[in-house]
Length: 250
Length: 256
Ligand SMILES: Nc1ncnc2c1ncn2[C@@H]1O[C@H](COP(=O)(O)OP(=O)(O)O)[C@@H](O)[C@H]1O
Ligand SMILES: [Mg+2]
Image (cartoon, rainbow over all chains, first blue to last red; front, top):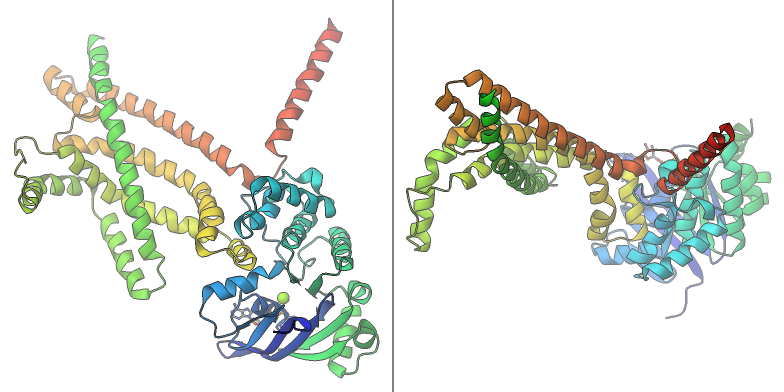
């Protein structure tokens, strides 16, 4: 089989909660190394779409491809879903660090459990990852002993260390105090430069403009606009995008 | 005065029985509680309802009735088992009252253990489960490494309460001829005809044991729950205390 040209393909994904149609046929193809920023008003289904990618939420229809591994929405086999999940990693809005693990143990956990790495090796790798996000000296702190910004950076290290094909961020800075947003964005920026494929939901327009190689505007569960940051943010074609940007800049 | 010392000796001779009775009942209650919690947490509504009703039933019955009921049924149950397996060794003059008391106490505490488990489970934030799922953990990896360890920590204060309650409830088993602390105290009270004195002595010993366990659980709670408290990691904190001591020593020497 030829290597697919896309790292991540979301094909025709529909999702409803009861009679609330949240995703109405989302199609996105992401090339390797792209940094995709998803913009859109609250309730437009950004989080749901991200969660459908790693099956935290099961789509009603459609399929997800990561690398060359495709799983359809109807897939019953838990192992297949797990395999897909192991090709992605997620950074959560609420960090969701394991509360009973220290910073370094949080980063190790996936290596030990999922990749079956031995503990010494995993610890070394985890410490390197923590160093990359500038938190090596906090490695023995529990999440409750870290600030929000530090927790989120551990969350990023935890996701990165798994070397996923696609890294998903769901509003990584919106639970943070304003003065802590900068350190996390800086951290994501550094990660973006390494060439890893990323999909970031955020409301930080300035960040999107400089870090994104591609910006997607979503509303009502569909992709409304898709292009470079100049195209979508500076010269939006549709009225809805213009309205949204005007509101967010106001 | 002699009454008190003699009575104390009698009561203390019952301590091992009380402790072992409590320990076995707690272990059995926990096992039964875990089984019940599987039912109560089941995804199938009928199963859930069925086990909730069982829990409610067990909770609604006084412990003494369990003890009496089991005690009354010993001979028929043991005789029945004896016949069924063809041992024919059951001696009706030596009924295993102790084991049946353990079962009675365990059954009456099993629903509380079940509640303890389910409520601990519900306090684990959804994000903890999702973080495991997103990383591709299997169900077992998720439970054994993240969810259950956190549940245990959350359940410890509750467990401590149930433990000391069961310790006190075990005194009821003197009603089915088991000679634990209370049984010994009652026995001696009847012999000496000093009822009040004996009960007071027994009460004080119960209190003493209660305090020991309560403090023990408090220490365990603090130790295990460390990660939920904001603050500095323990290693660092120790070092800092050491630092303080050094400083104080310095000041002391200066004063000299
Ligand atoms: N688990 C859920 N159950 C029911 N409705 C949900 C659930 N998750 C999200 N929704 C609904 O889906 C819609 C889109 O939500 P979301 O994807 O979180 O939007 P966004 O992240 O763009 O703000 C909202 O109307 C929300 O109420
Ligand atoms: Mg959202």
